[in-house]
Length: 195
Figure 1: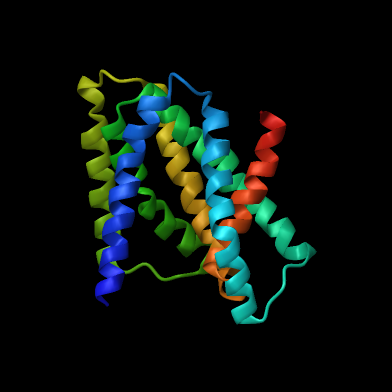
Figure 2: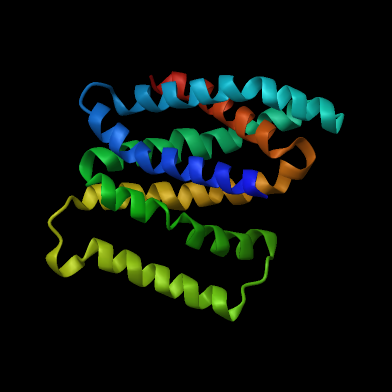
């Protein structure tokens, strides 16, 4: 149990520092190239772990899974993460971080629509509070930032939520690490066309 808290703390630290790192490197790299490198390295790091997971589950990757990885890779890497990278260029890193972290609001909505997961009263209240929080952060009456940045980060959050829900339909079969690894690598292959 303590190990789980440590992993959550580490993930939170690294993920929260991402916007600042992306902001610092935004002028030196093209957004698409930087996104490609991030996910290619991530996919390669996950490759041995994915192979071990498949062996443990006694599963193999067929054409159906590869096609699915190309779909999830397109949603996550090509669409969501390019929008995310663009949002860091046009909006303050702190605004991007907070708005993107609200993607769970969209996950709940998509899970209800596509997976028929129930939404309880406390969930609806938390969604409304999240939307109120987003409105306060954007502050439309005194907005001085770039509307393009806000649109990009909200688009990134929505498509990342869609990736999570679509991925959930097959994660039990092939495993979460394998799904993430396959999505990252297939998304990078698709991104090569854009590069």
